[in-house]
Image 1 (cartoon, rainbow, N blue to C red):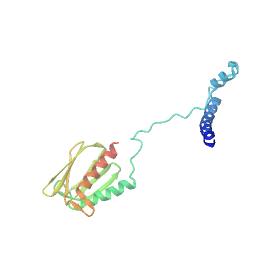
Image 2: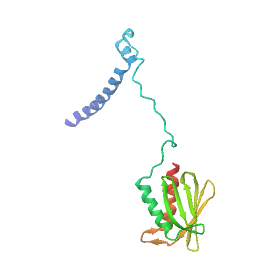
Image 3: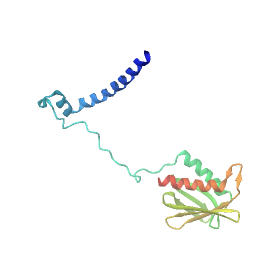
Image 4: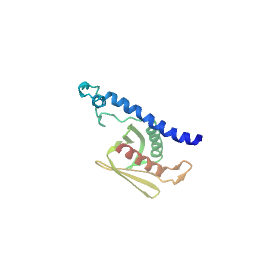
Length: 175
């Protein structure tokens, strides 16, 4: 008997709870009040109704990309791989900096190369003579760097992690 009573009570409670917001919405709607009272002469039209403030749309140009902990940690790992025998062209890589969330600088003795990951079109890699060469195709001249391909180590495969890290930067900055 208790089960039958609860089966009838549950839908009543659910439906009863649904009426409150509708009644509240109808209280704010002057046309609903006029229709509900049956007397259109009692209806007042509120022309200064509390309208929500206009929403301003921010563009990505207004919001500067910020560096969060994930990007900082990722950049440190990529830097470690690149400093361990990495080269840009024929020059040894001396630093890898995260300038902002979507811009990095690869530094060699001959200068710095900046990569804007928002403008990267493709990342292509190949292994040859014990080195993984990664070509970053972007607006302008492609960036081609390489690191020793040491295979699997206790910390993983550095070459694959570097390639994955670059892909993450490109995907994250283009979404």
